[in-house]
Length: 447
Ligand code: PA5
Image: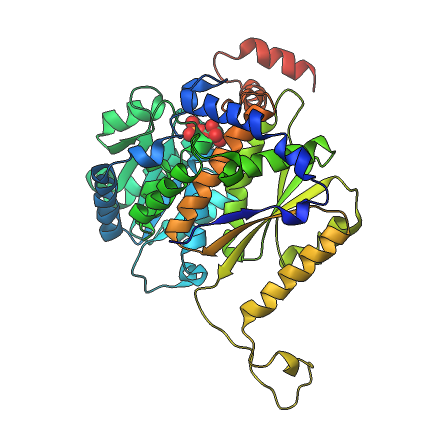
């Protein structure tokens, strides 16, 4: 069986074998902490053994609910933000036909998103679109108190109930939330919605392999059994029993930390496949929220090539030398498209006639890699045999595991996010939320 693989050869110019191997011991210690639960944030390690602990009956229950929603709905709105949104979107976009979104005669419901912003025009236009659609809602919030999805859900619930009545709406709403706590749990119990539980010990950004990600992914028509099988495979390949020289998550964590030590403070996750745009977004959250603490941490940025070579390419080639790239390279595309011969050849492209579009893309990738390495941008590569659920499952677990190891190498707690509370506190104070009276006075005095 083939797997995704990690290769840091083009970073080796900056990374000596000696420097790289000096991480063998610290990485083993980080892995030990993750597996034995002895490191910081150890009450949020449920994701480490998640793939191997999901049973077929757990998956079957999710699929059963997904089938009901697929039958009842032309459109399913996934309400959530951050870790309660990005994983599902990453997998769905990577796996499905991009132009299905514009298809009116569909075999699967269209999956659309809400609660990931507070844009008034966005929610207005979404509700206008839903007005004459048979739609359902998956409302996802671990805390059950996040403002953005709560506002969206309040609006969408009212719209749905006014369209189909309270009883039918109840059958088309599923809540994914905490087992006991939070406003969404209370609401779901009161209204009698079907619910799925987010385990206490799995944080938002590590939750794509719980119902948070699995339910929307199944609704969109992807195979969640294969996704979990891929993740499970990677769980085995990156366990604490696998030595450093064979453990790709350990190697990626070591390489990026050594580059960081050398002043490469920005990591660009690069793809050459537009289907991976939201995978980049998921990865940015995973690493940004896990590592950006105590005034430390690589800044995770992401680009879609070759698109962004025409916008960010100049900076990457010749700007400040503080970046390195991790390229997610998909070896084989799903479809074949050949560039046709043209008699007039006015565009001068006949030298490409008969070539597949992907062959051109691969040369763009290789040419860029060489140019960027020449421009002192270390390059690492994650090779993916093809984009399907199995390999996406491998990629998810690979990046999660490397993130846990990397956070411990950095000596921070990779599993909390105290920094995201600051804006919420100010927003509530500015909005005069009950309980924030003192903060309201203080903040209003400053503006
Ligand atoms: O990773 C995280 O913890 C966050 O991004 C959360 O997922 C996000 O803030 C949404 O939180 P909740 O699921 O509680 O609504």
